[in-house]
Amino acid sequence: MSTDPERPSLSYFPQGGKSSSGEIGYDQEPLISKPDGRRHEDYSVAAAILPFLFPAVGGMLYGYDIGATSDAIISIASASSSGIGWYNLSSVQIGLITSGSLYGALIGSVLAFNIADLLGRRRELILAAACYLVGALVTSVAPIFGVMVAGRFIYGIGIGLAMHAAPMYIAETAPTQIRGLLISLKEVLIVSGMLVGYIIGSLLVEVLSGWRYMYAASIPLALIMAIGMWWLPASPRWILLCAIQRKGNMHDLKEKAIGCLCRLKGERHGSSASQQVDEIMSELSHISEESEASLAEVFQGKCLKALIIGGGLVLFQQITGQPSVLYYASAIFQDAGFSAASEATRVSVLLGLLKLIMTGVSVLAVDKLGRRPLLLGGVSGIVVSLFLLGSYYTYLGNIPVVAVVALLVYVGCYQLSFGPIGWLMISEIFPLRVRGRGLGVAALLNFGANALVTFSFSPLQELLGAGAVFYIFGVIAILSLVFIYFIIPETKGLTLEEIEAKYL
Image (cartoon, rainbow, N blue to C red; front, top):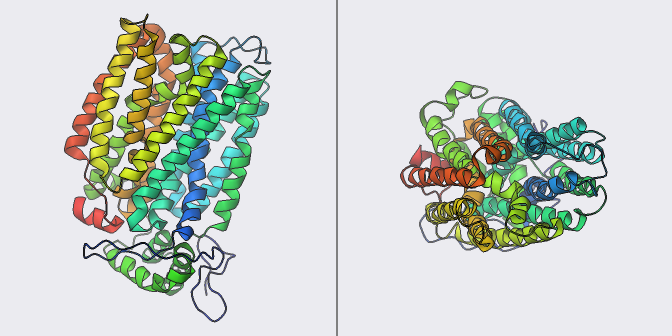
């Protein structure tokens, strides 16, 4: 039998040739199929956890960076607790620290565009974990400002790779019935990471050189992610794409895909893996045998339509002010009257708890209510909150409760809508042949807009005033509502192949 194109050393079949989950070894009953006449996959709930969990740790590390950086910029700029001689930073330097990881994420997205289909989802996630590890080490020991920015940049490359590969791996390995749940649940780990970042930041913000410990705390998670992804199998759909594109022996690659499915579905439900592989191959029979999709193809036909849907959604996710609200949450709370650094960071912890609760609500509702209702309702709340923030900084500065309520409304509504559903949609909407490149372009749009908004918020605040900036975000949020209403389709309950056939 030939070598697995993504995992050369591990055999997926036990003695005797019978398919088995092997190393996962969970034994659970499948969920009940829906009475809608369509085939639903048998799967073990327990066996579905680890193929979700380890990729999602990459999202947790992204969230941790947001939470920790919100408090780290306060620690770094403190004369008494920074522990460095270059603490007196300009607004541009603060912008570089906060957005440095996002510029790295841009490079990671560009790399992902070129290497994703070559490496596969699993190897890309291993590479992301390595970048997280190196970036955290460099940032935490940085002796000068330039080295710190370099560490933030390396860490950001890991963000770009992880946020590109994780939703693809989860979408391609998750059972159809709970695909929306699992991809949205990845947002729970992002928010959990953010909450952990806020908590650790609040504990260390007044400790000498506390910012170094904040960034070093992400190292154990990076190691867990690397080990977990090394152990997991490749995405069966990626292996079948390799088979269709003649990147190996067709029969051997199909056997490898069956082996991966056996591990992913659980031991008792592995018997249907061969049938499922045949069905996926049949559904993908229209795919060209050309080795890879070209860049031009991403901007043509059904791929262009998918890019407008997915790319537009994650672009609005950022330019409605999300990076500014999250990265500068502690600073906003200080402006609202929580003047002490410790007070502002503790309120940020409450913000993180709210995000976690509202993300849980979205995760539970996304496969029941659907994507569109959550998007429309949540973004409507975002519009209200942004205009409240603009009014606070313009007219209502003597009523700090307005800023606090507006932030809480923004965060709650964002986690109902853009937060989990943006990445869910881009992982679902692209056809398999261009999924790696299409999601790479969408991620590039996302992180490019994120970096631009994060970097520019502090200088724009000085130039125009915070009130005007939040009003601008509010107007953009109204435009995003129009986009969602007319452009975004409903994809709940459909397989990836059915989404492509129905909407593209």
